[in-house]
Length: 337
Image (cartoon, rainbow, N blue to C red):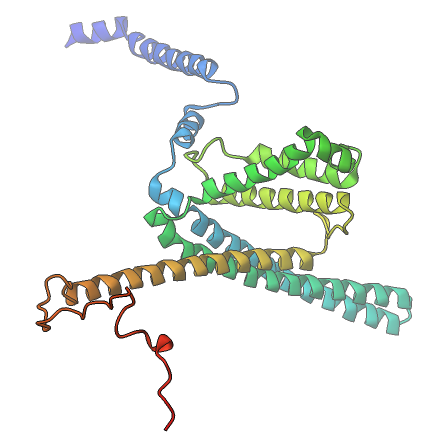
């Protein structure tokens, strides 16, 4: 027992020294790993997140991306309605407070008028938010209606469709930049000093910033909504610039009224839903006619296999080559009695 105690007294410092060396070594390894990470990545967790985001999107997620984005869009529209109702209540309370202070001669009538104006603005914003919820519901129904066609492959993926729409806008713009005849006829479409063209260029820069690298790029529903809205703003800005350059009247731009944006979204959603409904009806009708024709062909025997009930052939034609009996339209009228 005494030798063991003497050994412990002699070598007691080995345990704490080993623990301290291990701690120092772990801290050094962690610092070296942080320095070895790529720029902008501060931890291995961030690197894992980036590695997950770099993986291609699965087929099921790519097909349901528009539906998931429409659900998120509807949820945000409902949250906007909730905030709008709260703003209306606050504005109404401000009107009551301003009227009470006016009755006590503490404020002037201008304060009451300003409070009422804020209440009217809040009510208008609430109506616009409610209309936005209706538009988002229609968009969700249209996305769900398009999902079977996407699954069968008869319709493109949502990201592929957005990329095609964006490329079509860029092709229309590049036509004014590369065609000398269009550049001479419509110089405003190639003049960056034009306010409407400047709005289009800003919207185009935003759309290019949020544009995915390819169809297989992994996108969250919020990222898809950002790119979709950017493409829509780019299309509206280009239409306004083109209409003004060709002598028309531009519509409200990005800073327009909320009602105009809701009306535009409703029109686009209705047009997209109508197109999809017509395509679905056409495919269903073609499939029904094909099945009906197949059943009729299977039920009706061919003419070559059917037994002939006639024992004699058709009468020979006349000597002059005319058929007999002649057609009804060529027969002479019967003689009158």
